[in-house]
Amino acid sequence: MRYSYLLFDADDTLFDFPKAASRAFAKMCQIHGIPYTPEAYRIYHEINLELWAAFDRGEVSKDFVVLERCVRFLKAIKLERDPVRCNQDFLEALGRGVYPLPHAEAVCRELRERGHHLYIITNAVASVQRNRLRGSVFADLFDGTFISEEAGAAKPDRAYFDYVRRRLPCLTAENALVIGDSLSTDIQGANNAGLPCCWFNPAGKPRREDLRVDYEIRSLRELLEIA
Image (tube, helix red, strand yellow):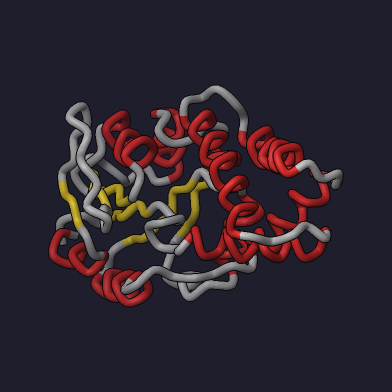
């Protein structure tokens, strides 16, 4: 066993987040009488991406992001609705959206059987992520979950990984591997923390020259040859 501790990102690494988000958005529209069209979702999605990018850069808080995206979306489509209620209903629906990515369950189950310790490291909204994990096939496969808003810091900040290390004192740069799809949060975070990393890159996106990528995989099944 090369790495005893495997630190997995959740969304777009284990979970199909786009599918969960689009279905949660449709449910929110249904509840609030908002016409659900591909164009409406495109507008929301672009606003959401822009705000989360600002969060990743440390410019805004997570609480700001999750509400402001509804405020800006409603303004963009020129409808008067309560953005607080829209946000609450979206998050509730998102918490029920559990769609594992291909091979995710089987790979995690085999890694667990081999004796690896599996943990989730995520910047997602705590209530949403815990609800999703509780209702997922991963509930009994992971030893714990580290969520940024509970840590007081977010990936890629080294302080977030320091928080994880304080709770896993046996974790070292020799026995841990960070696995994630995001160069800006997962891989940059592993670089900042001095931890080995595996970039899950199913779409074959180009690397960043300023980042160390120890492993790159297109399918989660490849992780079985690495860990």
